[in-house]
Image (cartoon, rainbow, N blue to C red; front, side, top):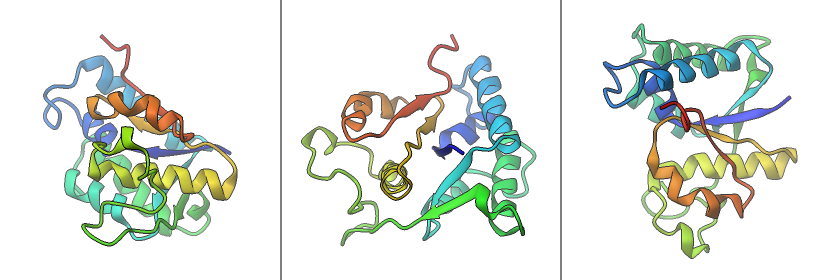
Amino acid sequence: MGAVVIDTNVMVVANGKAAAPQARCKCIIRCRARLAEILSGSERILLDDKKRIIQEYRNNLNEKGRGFGDRFWQELVRRMWREGEQEKVIRVHVTPLEGNGTDFEEFPNDDASLKDFHKKDRKFVAVALVYQRDFGQEAPILKAEDKGWEEFRDALATHGVRVDSICEDSR
């Protein structure tokens, strides 16, 4: 059974033009399809144990919203607590470094090519690396139209982190 880490922008784009006016229609459709595939399939969703990722989702989505991304997030939270569904959501322990709460021991901090990598996205990388270490399987990070990941794709790959762009060719 595979696992994925989902960047917040996938759910925001899945909510449509009102939430992500820059998103192309094909990208919105692809994000919705990918999230539906995750919910109906066997892939596990990875989160951190201190709910940093869930908090970011909460800050960017509407817990009472009717957008596709909102409904995905609501279902994800339900599955975290529903009997028999906890195995669908895996929470891994990441170790924060002293300071601002966005740097983690598991992030490749010693790699100079990643020094400018977005601080708020480091938790996703740390979760993917912990899962790989603890479960011996790769867990790609899914992203929509977030160009911030692109310039670091190769550097992350050298550490075993794969970034999957749902919308890369949806022009």
